[in-house]
Structures are given as C-alpha cells and as structure tokens.
Length: 156
Image (tube, rainbow, N blue to C red; front, top):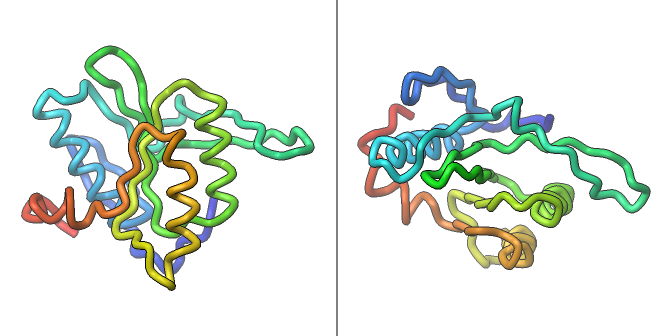
C-alpha cells in the first residue's frame, strides 16, 4: 500500500456499506457508483473487495505482484469490470495498470479528478493517455463532468 498521509481519508456509509476511503475522490466515486446502482445502470459494486485481488506479472524478471481494484462493478450483464481512481499517477502505477489491462479481460475504467495537459501535470497526463487504448474508459476530469452536477449528494 502507498502512503497517502497528505490526502484526507474519509470514513463514510454509502449505500449501506461503511467504507474507509483513502481519499475524497474514492468517496465521491462511490456515491456516483451507488447512484448508478439505484438507477439500474449496474447491479452491484464493492470497494476494495478482497475477492477481486488480482495477480499480475509486470516485471521483466517474472516477479509476481498483486493488484486490488478500488471498485469492482457487477454490470447488468452479469459481467465484472474494475474502476480505479487516481490522484497521482506514477510510473509504477502505469506499469501495474498496463499489466492488469493486458492480463485480464474485465474492462477497466480509470478516473482522475482533474488531470490536465499542463506543464505541472504533463507527465501524468501522458501516462494516462498512453493507456487509453487498453482501457474501457478514461475519465480525466471527474470533478467537472461527473461530480459537479451531483455535489449536493456529498457529505465531504
């Protein structure tokens, strides 16, 4: 696990599930995901579900690594997909997500609150864009496109 000491953690109940979210972004995405469930867009969702722990082999030496998706989604078609929220997108995260997408058939969505092609974020932005062809969906601006219209639903 990474050190998220600089990020405000959130403990909240969403859809009857009490979760210890590592960030407000994860909390807000869970509210959005619960709303999709209530609207019948998905059947169910889980936050860091231990049953979704995936084994990947991203290293050139064949070293085994584990990946636990932020959100596991049960779609209406009885298929599973994964949704990963990212605040900072490091090179190691890129390698891990690329390996997950290449190893598993389940669709993966990556969500960023506000990742732009600016000087300070360009490296992260380029990493995300390089993965776009492997992803089901890449959301670079969830704060504007998803969270702004439903901000009244958030406690945090």
